[in-house]
Length: 591
Image (cartoon, rainbow, N blue to C red; front, side, top):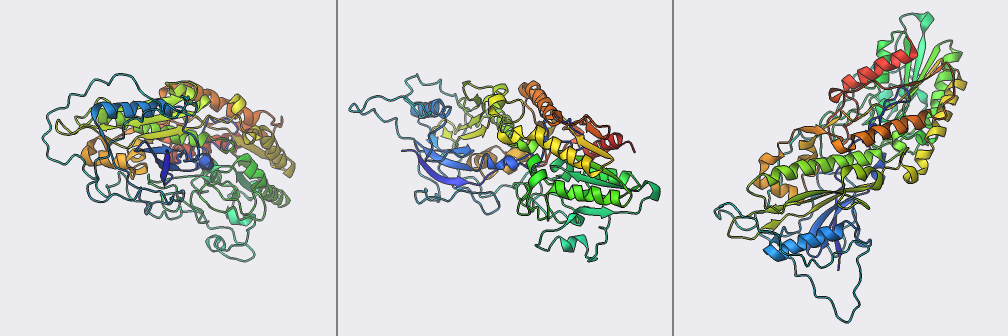
């Protein structure tokens, strides 16, 4: 009987996130599949869990609950594992619940059938032999991927090196391991100009603490223009590229109050309007007297148009404004024109209408596991059965280039060589799932929210033109292909509390000295480049022809212009990247 033992904390949603998955450039209409914001797509893959299958604890991300059949790719994988156990007498790393104390990830309720936490040295946990079929029952197939008999001969045994028995057959890993990156700290707000004086004369930071929805002034900063005759107002909406998401150091949490997510004087973690390219352009243009930023991490084009006060961004900050972002932008532009000022509008948007950030998050985890597995295989502590595999739906065995279109993922199976005196030890296997892409260019997979992008972009642009904006700039997404990610933090910190990872840290800590690696697998470069184009094309598809409108292609960002931090910094722009975007915005506005 397959049994769900307990749930694990949700480990990682980078890219964001925010920008989580590909980053978007908020100034024009043409960036590549960017990391828009801290994954709003987190709701697609809700949580990870450990599920006990034939006595073997499997880490599944996303979770496959007990009530659901096993995915088709798991049947042959489980068969192979059980076959190796039958042939070698291997033991299984005992089940160990994950500590949730240091995290803030969503979890599933532990069931009454959960296995208790083992104490002391756990008993030998060999997997029971494959049960003999009941002759009274007709044979059945395994359409849901359930394990079946493995009649193939045993694999060639590993020839272990001479390792003296200086430790027991199973050594409990330490209760904690030092993180590969500094512990999360509270990030103070970035420096910003004093907020504009309102009728209440209440500072922005104080007003932000009041629960009642605020008006547009809550997202405004001001300065005296250098030339009063050229006085102008800059108004921004968008996602995490414009908001702008900035993770200053990697951390084992998606809680933006704990994972080094920067904030500004509004006290909205994950949103830093002065770090944004829009804020940098405000500082660059000495004649802009007012700057409004209504962008939020994780916002889709639908949110820009319709977000209500209770709507939360990807960092759990309520929108808490009296009107949606577009309506506040409309008010700000009209107020500027009534005051005789120029009005410039800029936005990004579209990436959070798709599940791209989730896909990038999971790919990053898989790449970290692949590098870690290769490093472990090169040590004397691994048997020759240790393996890493990519898999894709409808294409078995899978390859990364098929996963974006079909969905799939990766699997890591680690077998520990314990010398000539004890049988191998199977560490809890890991399966990371990756959904099929559902954005522009995905054909039948395209979601209803993705299909809104062309119409929403048209609505946003036409609203700003009708309000009287002197220049409307849609920043297209930049390509994330050059992005690199902090693999050491991804594997050691983000997956650090997983039993198999803790065990490897205990016996071979040197393999965790991983460097930065490309976020995008080489096999996916061509496909991602096309999808980036498809997204930007969808944004531009219904935009009107107007001399005041610019769909601004993003500048080329290199690895040094993109954040490396996990789980949510990569592939958002860093300071250098935002400087380049600010220069592109300046070129689009023309002053």
